Amino acid sequence: MTSHISPEKISADAGTTPADATASWISNHAPARTRPFLQLARLDRPVGAWLLLWPCWWSLAFASPASGRQWPDFTLVVLFAIGAVLMRGAGCTLNDLFDRNIDGRVERTRGRPLPNGAVTIGAAILFMLSLSLAGLMVLLQFNKLAIWVGLASIPLVIVYPLMKRITYWPQLFLGLTFNWGALLGWAAATGGLAPAPLCLYVAGIFWTLGYDTIYAHQDKEDDALVGVKSSALRLGENTLPWLWGFYSAAITAFAIAGVLADMSWPFYISVLLVALHLAWQASAVDISNSDDCLRKFKSNAHLGWVLFIGAILGAAL
Image 1 (spheres, rainbow, N blue to C red):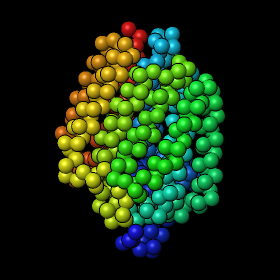
Image 2 (cartoon, rainbow, N blue to C red; image 1 turned 60 degrees about the vertical axis):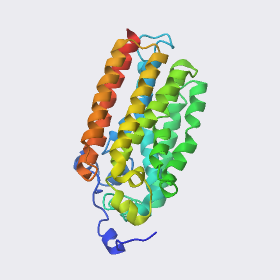
Image 3 (cartoon, one colour; image 1 turned 90 degrees about the vertical axis):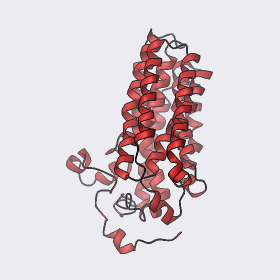
Image 4 (tube, one colour; image 1 turned 180 degrees about the vertical axis):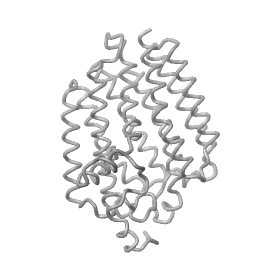
């Protein structure tokens, strides 16, 4: 792996806000000593937590009739929200531990707490373990099957940060990891599994392949320079047709999941709205413009509300 950024340039950024972060409550209000750890957990950028949470909440809504409820269990809704924030923070810290040398060579990430020296490796490990332990405490509030389903995701969480070193499709492994909540939510609500959450899981994987390929186009030049892989590098200028394919597969799987869960018409209205938004992403994204890629990526966090509300109403009616 070849570096074209000198150690002096990297160290000059020590103590600064990461280049991929914007002004937030952390930089404006958090105590100075806590800021690097809050940045490690990406609490200044909640979009990732939302993307991890949506499959969980969708699945809870899907499972309402099967669990004998008209509405999602509010306690489970809250527990999944807490768990998503904790486990996203733990996963990001693990990712930064693995990638600390790579991040120091990438313009967007070289100001992160580990490559800039604001947090030591030992402190980051302790922080990650603390978040993981807190996440385990949340998981233990669920039924036995849900606990085992949750624990089964650990290998994916561990191997995902390594995939960019060996395959051009780390986005697929992110999809497998980030959408595990589609299985976990159903298991927590019903004590079992069924075809509907499995189909919802597949839908989420294709959705993630689309939005994270867009996200990866921000770093394609630096990724090529330091020798890591991504779907953005693999697809290059052919990305847009593939986005149409990924998103078409996601919409088809969402609709099939709705049929399997016996959803009523409001859910399919929400699927249509989601389809229109994803069609806009695939047709309008400028893969040569990092700012536009980030805007399109972030829009997916808001998009989750459409499907969640549609699933709640589709199950209730």
